[in-house]
Image (cartoon, rainbow, N blue to C red; front, side):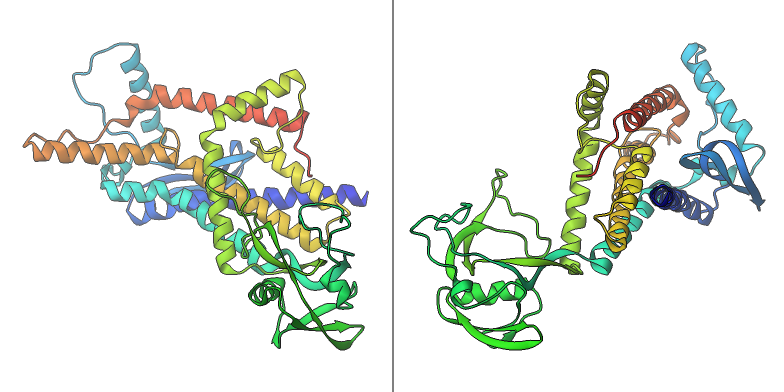
Length: 437
């Protein structure tokens, strides 16, 4: 029963985080739109039937039954229809869409229409939502990395090896392998290294720099053992080892993706991992890597979804690095919450990182330059700006705003495609959910 409640709490934690993320995204659109004098009639979290709403001024604020997104209704997204348009199925479809939009808009001052805004203001309104997700993602990730921290090598010895293989990647020592410098120095498991060559050390990055600088020369050590300070000396061995970024702990790779190795001082010990805050530089690198990976995932989304569909219908194992829906994220959060191998600090860390990654995904996805996404509206505004500037340079009459209503058939098709993709990923999360490693 405790695991059941823990699972529910994990899911609720993520659902609350998703609701906040969606709410702030829509607020990112709402605030600049109102500041620029545009009429906003609705601010809704979710889709479907309205659960609760309240009207303040000309805007209705509320929650809807299906928490899979949100929206704001901005008046005047479509400019008025031009006279003399030919009548066919396409123009009738566009005209019907315009009439539906006007019915939603109701009676309002045309000067408050969205299409009346300048190009820069329209771009600010449309980018406001993704920008809020980017900021929230950065804050959540910084909270996790710098506020809670990650498991890093401390200065406490967990194991002293008998020897150091000449080939440091080997598992066992052969007859030619030299004895472990730490064993020769009398270092024991549980010792905490507090000083090297007279310099105090509080983490292994500091210790490693001093040892690397000393090379294979005699080096003095102070260790804390059972509350007592013990002085000894050690002669490290230099070995070619895999290199890691000292800020993030991520293995370094060259341009071809192969691990980078370098000469490092080796004592022949294993270190105990300790929870320690990451530096701001390391956190910035991690965030940059997250954004790069998220962007790559968005670009490969059609291929990944196709692969996911193939696995789903063939019964093949789920790709753990593939796309995950809100349902899947909730399942992961519930699994983390019920894990006995993670303490509450680790569970909070994982939850914050999940929500941070979700916000990075919302940012990257929404700036894709396709309607009905925010990036599509930005692209439309940029195109209009270029077109009207070109007409002005050529001395031609201003062509007026670009008629976004004419994109309704394409937008409708894109909405349908997005819904199909969403349902497919949700189905995969229900049938073959992603499991923690």
